[in-house]
Amino acid sequence: MIVGFPPFYHSNQQTMYELIEKFPVKFPDPVKHKIPMSEEVKDLLSKLLEKDPKNRLGTDGGVDEIVSHPWFEGFDFDKLLKKELEAPMLPKLSDDLEDVSNFDDEFTEQDVVHSNISESALNLVNKNKKQFDAFDQ
Image (tube, rainbow, N blue to C red):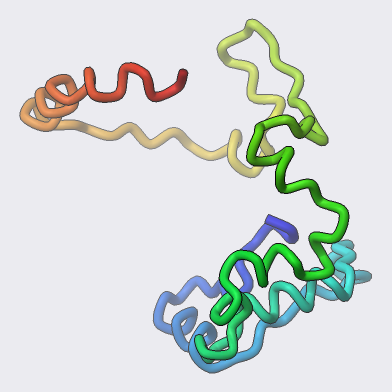
């Protein structure tokens, strides 16, 4: 989420797995990609993506080891847990159900692909719908 794409992405899934298993994480060039990253966040991500699980951040000290990393300095985790933090950006919403202004053109300009759902699958969805009544409350 920091840079907008995964650290080991490749269109070929097998190649992507090899990148994950064998190659170090590469960070985008701040000038070429216009994505500046602090040394602290690079260090955090490198330690979280460490190949050897024994050496990975959080292995010995758990979540406390992770949240005490310098990149999180000054972050109030107590407020986060109490849901007292203010969002740094709130999207502007309209009453227009077709308003897609908060989505990138890359996605809104894609052709719509309709999915066909079988009668039995639809019945299964409707049968289990009640279990999710309070999902968004």
